[in-house]
Image (cartoon, rainbow, N blue to C red; front, side, top):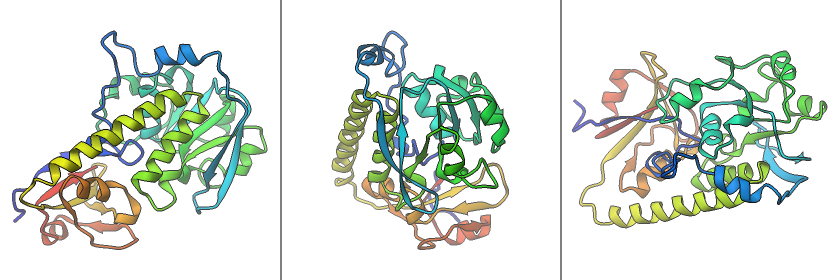
Length: 278
């Protein structure tokens, strides 16, 4: 039997995946405007373009993407990317969305209004037809059998912004680099720097509270997407382990580097005290 099992439903994770440390930050002020709408007006005349951003391929190779001018037409792939665009008031720039998952999001209403072009990976032709200035996506999208590799888009004058956090050493520091790159690409560094400071301050407060805890619960993270079996994420493949341990828990390590498929029986055998399902 699972001891005091608590099941939490979270939205991705990963790129907005600080669990209790990012998504819960208010995305609107008292006047109902998302973060960025007011500050963007102040920064409008302060162009930082062109900008060079160091990013990584899905294989972990470092490359540089040059963004010549402020992106006006953006194609995004991934729920986390959609959430970030909304959070910082950039949703009007989005001309196409693909590969949304079924995770709960406080931005569900806004996401449903976005121009969804594919439930999975959109075709190259569909993306080209939208004439994007930039493609913002998880790095795993940029493969020949998905949306094409990065060079395919660069050859057509379209820079890409792949999420670093999906490729190398997945850690909170890498997540923060993702946000910094995002701010640089869209000329909203003031807003993203402010956001990152808020998150770091909140994390420090959580750690202080966690020091007073008398127990250290064993926590298991699995992904389901509505299937009967579940996927286990190793510490190297997510940042949830750092979040859990920073909050006073112990992340159950069943594998060092590889994903594992788990049945209900194997989850019970792992004997978690708390479960996080994404």
